[in-house]
Image 1 (cartoon, rainbow over the protein chains, first blue to last red):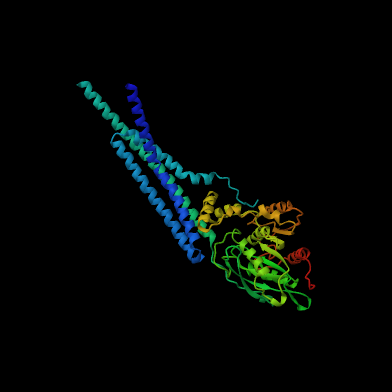
Image 2: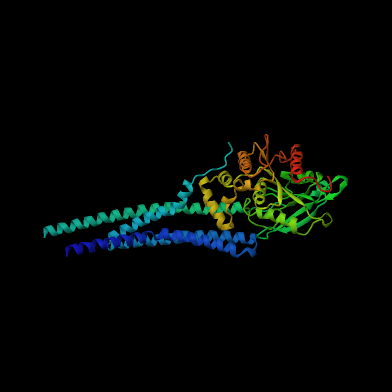
Length: 131
Length: 348
């Protein structure tokens, strides 16, 4: 009986951790989904509007790219704020495990968001310097 | 009772500690998240901005024509191969002895990036004059996004090779500019800088171009972009991958594929003449050797090189922006084309 109770409690804790980490990873998921959508929208727009002529198409593409970036930044901020609030609520409700897991998830999100820049920095660069 | 109160107080202290630790952790994670997201969004924004700058520049006007040397010419227009981009140019018949005109041996002239078919900087009209007086007809044209051709993104050879292929199609099956002279029977190509790299890419795909002069072509464009993004914007070279990805979304161009060094061997056995200034500060002089070495690996390759001493990028012919011209350049190039394309059937 005691074993079952312990198993149930540890199972609940594991669920809370998973739930918390999942919520904490939401900003990273939003970020990458947003990049894919933005890349897709700009590429589709370019392919779908060749008849406009490049000089008309170019400012449209630039504006849409900028809007996608701004939308991504705003969306990312809103999602992050909601996730922080959720962590605070869980902490206030005494669900410390879930709240801590959210913070761990958010920390991983912070690193995941930086991955494209890290990859770019770590990629071997071979600039054509004149010796 | 006393022990119960003490336990309650202890729990409260523990909760307060947990709450403080939670707040501290929250602030720490928030700070890291804000920092990393600012870095990433800044990187993305700059990448898109630089990519937008890279892909377009207002075309320079055509300020000279072959009439400068009293040469006959006719304006022509033709579509690029594959995507049909509208291109403008001129056809200048070659001159034989006695003033007879000929179109038998035609040289397609391919200008450099952000230039046009008549850019005075590179002396294209002067070189046209040399070719024409040697009995070669010349097809000069503006690549996409330059001169009078259709506005399109500048892609450093990725899409421009279609323009060269369009020029070949025009000579082989388009409206004949001088019907009385007939169609060209043999085609050669001359290109400078990006034009040379583009010509190499196109020649590897088109057997009808029988000989190529490549003046200061790059072996691949990405190392030059890596350097130029840094030099021109002051931004780190690490920005380049982001810029190239943004360019792919904005213009559909894959700069990583602009690598003449990968295809130049397939031009053999058709002859190639590589020319490069050994003081070139834009395209490293080593690129010529890299291209020549790669070209040599082709079956029955005919590769010739000329290192022009003390001159910079695209200055092998017109040695400075205001001249003078290198007196060796014309005779060497004409000799190469004469050997490679043969004599005019009507006699030079």
